[in-house]
Image (cartoon, rainbow, N blue to C red):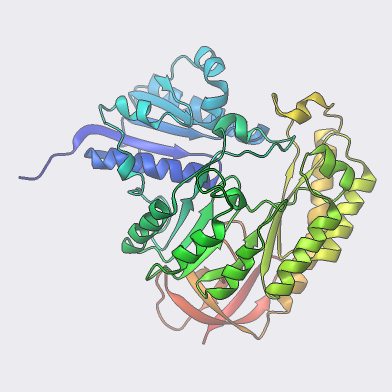
Length: 434
């Protein structure tokens, strides 16, 4: 006899980063295991319980999280849903304020309180189920969290306040999770954590990311492994050697440098100078010349001058990163930078960010232009407006370039095809299957 689904119907809404998405997938996996009907970001009002996994990273993210909570509370007031639960970073950081301000929420939970949230559904948290996730991504790719928290002390960052100290997951558990994901049809995994290069220091007493990569590269059926969020200070260069050894580890590295002015880097407590960053990048490119380097920058940190901004632009022109993202500085309480005066108006921060990205746009276009006529292995992500969209190993999901693919044959998400690039744009390219 088939076990009936329980009457609760849950919709999980995820805000913020891919690390939050993984938390939502783990939560969904536990709920499904308990025979609860659970969806991720369903647009249909078929559920009676909303769980909002919030972000508290910067002002804009906090605003989006609060607006989403208020929208769900309004649905509850209208009788369209019965309960609203809130979890994640914003809830961890501002639980008491939120309880006072939005009492209509049934319960708030911090980032480490999945057990307590599940108890609301009379479910026992099972550590052995953590690898059993309800994938919210298309089935051919998944994010994989290898650690939680961060031990770095960057002046601008509130993440350690919300996520705690760095905690690595054991290699065996990560490999088992990767094997489970491959069985579900996953072909590409993106390794994520607040700080990948710190991996292993707590449980193995040494930086163990190279060993982890080595083991993951041996998982049958895992076609692409991609690294996100590698801190440049004390970077373990063996990572690049392991990348070079295995064809299924993408020649791709996401390494946020945040700034290029030594004055600002020091004020940010980044523990690295511009010269050291440049030397590291030169060494990485010396070992893998065609590696794709992605970075993130912050515009408008307290005390930043026009000269500092010019230095960032010159740095970009010299280094020529393949991919760049930029945030405007957000003044976060209880961080070291909160003691500094947030002395740059938001419109100036925004203008500086746009000026910096204008420099990067030209670099990106030239790099894409150089790919015209060349053939690349491309993974198909989706079909949109009659065209297939995919990515090379040099592009991660949502944040990097897409290839608009012309194919005479039907393609499916997760297919790998060889594509000849026919036309380049600033941030995307067109190509034909060969």
